[in-house]
Image (cartoon, rainbow, N blue to C red; front, side):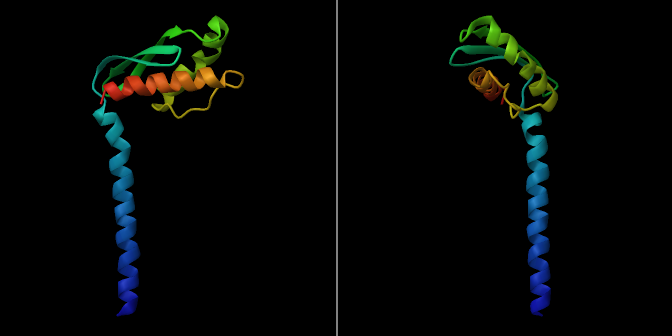
Length: 114
């Protein structure tokens, strides 16, 4: 009888974990409303376009820190964010601060799309 209880509890836990994981995966995409949203953080501003509930385009509209050199260095992050559909991408070496500000600006725009 104790064996049955031990088998049921891990199975229930596993089921709950799977349901939590699956429900969370589609949730962020489904919650994004189509449109164009502005976001900024520190010296970086972006315009993020959502189409079909996904990040379709990101334009950096302002980069005031370090000038064009750093703006050019972090531009590849835009493609990575769109590809991954997440701001959780690796920062650009040598432009860590600018990378972080770009990621946070995109996150701030995405909050408006929820």
